[in-house]
Image (cartoon, rainbow, N blue to C red):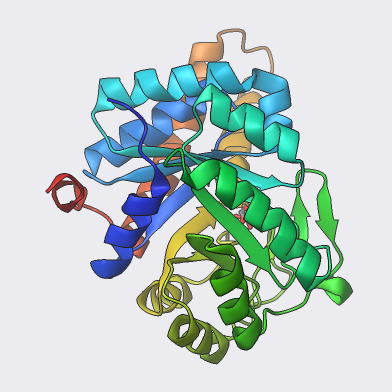
Length: 289
Ligand code: 13P
């Protein structure tokens, strides 16, 4: 099974009023267990990698493993490049077979963000590859992109309208109060702002910083039109914690299968929980209809 462009996946999800989770993966085996969990719930899913993961594993290798896993588990899968600031890396990822890319020019002034996004939209959409762009600034740490809490900035709804009209970007990630990483307190999500943005633009919206957002808040975001929900930190944490626990009890353990299996089981449960929250369980059929 080929990898799917996330443009139709997210449009269909939005029309059917559910979300699709995009899980950040950091290793080849995580590609397999994310898809294994998605297949068990008959849910479409998006795998995403940062630039750092491409540097560590290789874009072509990631694509080939994702294709093999999608074929094995027969699950509709998109492969997305998360938070990329570099046009050349985006081009390489598309050439390798990524079906979705994020151009993150949110650190630039509005006009520059428009220009950089336009350039990627022109290249990618003619090839059926989805594009995501960010407006406002999502706080926190994602790979080597670090935005201090004080510099985080929510997206302006009117600017969202202008941005989508000017760029033709098929998916938009507006900053609405979430942050990358685990929150110190409860995230203050600006639901009114999401509703206003959703009124102004017709494209599926993307929720960044999906880790540790209360379940009911994620559901509310999805109901308001945030069709892609990004989850990274929580998955890394639960996977690493299972390995730490294993070694706490068995410090001399030598068989990677023993501790990786425990980590996989814990992570798979987390994947399933997130899929259930966005409501994409048993939604594979409409995708192929
Ligand atoms: P979390 O690490 O907070 O889950 O955020 C993931 C994300 O938004 C990736 O772009």
